[in-house]
Length: 249
Image 1 (cartoon, rainbow, N blue to C red):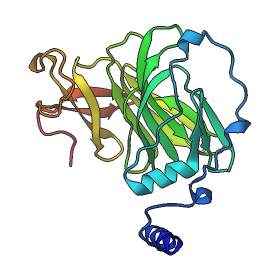
Image 2: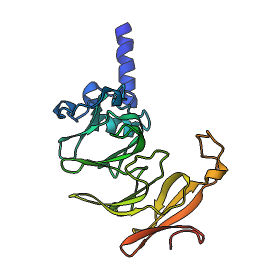
Image 3: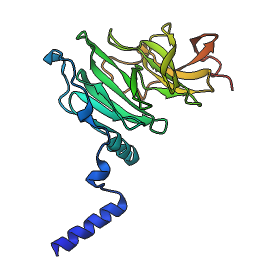
Image 4: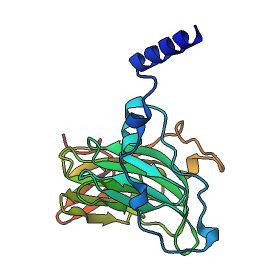
């Protein structure tokens, strides 16, 4: 009787998509193919576990389970050509906002930890699964242009050593990811973010004024955000306050 009940429970779970078989959930990234890492000071290896995959939404979880594998030292990502791209995560104490973008071409996440020089640092990793794979630390959560050919991120860190300070824009091609703009001259705000693109030459940014937030406040969702726009101006970009409502159109 118990066997019958157990079989019925498994059947219902499978029909509802609650559980996946081990074969379905197994990652196609072959972490054993990752080359041995160069030794570093054991005190800089701050991770205790592999990267945790978010439970929801379920579709994202299943896609990540099939695409990545990890331990406390390496994140392995299956590329679109079936190879394995390996990223050293030993200095990344915290990894969050793990996601897949642009129909699964990119794996992204935010991180906090340490720079190679031992100082505190943070950023956001964009892993391109095209070809053999590659990655760029874009500083903040990336936003893609309507064509998918440009990606932007904005970041002002509390730490002195970061990969990006300001606004960065990169061009995406089959051959790689190339930085096309880096804007440093920006107001000092908290929680800068890319709110969206308007065409290929203008994007909406926002942040929170320092003076409006008491010390030690972590959740900034209740505070007013100031809107800025970034526009292409010839070969460069500039960031200005959105006095007239933002980008044209």
